[in-house]
Image (cartoon, rainbow, N blue to C red; front, side, top):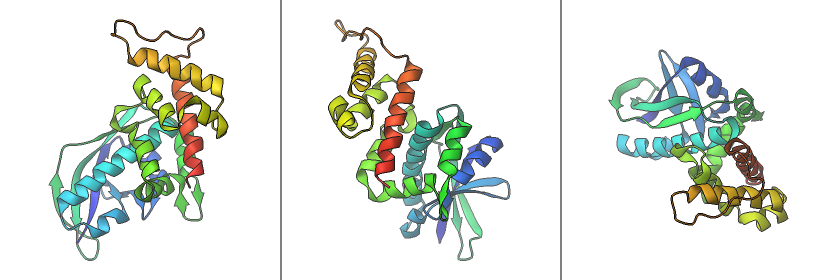
Amino acid sequence: MSYAAILRGEQSVLEAIGPCFASPEARIRALDEHWLLETSRFDNCSSVDEAFKIADQMVIEIQGLLSIYAGLNTSISVSSMLTLGANGEPVRQRLRDFVTIRVYSAAGLRELSESSNVTSLGSMLVARAADDPAVAEALMLIGERGLGWPQIYDIIEFLGGAKAIDSSGLGSRSQTARVRRTANHYRHLGRRDPDRLPTNPPTLAEARLFATGLLKCWLGTRL
């Protein structure tokens, strides 16, 4: 037996992200009226519950990639799990609560669709998350929550702070410090004495672009 997760979402969005994940490590494809998420990670599963856990993890990782590369807008969910027979034919289907993915930028999706030999960038990064805990952790920083000020702060801290980001060539020390200080201020709103904003704080949109740019550069070093 093998498994495939059934995705729920807008047809145009599923069609758009399909080319981003097109290898055995992570494949999104159409089957009749369904869109499936398939992965070689399912190969060693002995139960549907195990397959669901893997699918949940992959959805979070994929959401992280789509947040980094494509922004957030439309939702996709894992609606159920198919059990497949020896010849790949559906044997039974089990429903479940869904996990949400939000996606937006067409340019980001094209970037994730770019391939080296037969593997798209999206599939390569999902596969890398399976054997590189740091990549998995980076994608989990965003996960289902999207990219707000707390996540932006966490990304900068994950990458070592302004000094480490500057020394590694991922971004400038001054810009990182400006974004970090702004993120720290907003994530502590409601406290009696929140940290002060810098004199030229970035907008949330600017900070998102900066943080995702850092992560994109960093992910490139892990391939």
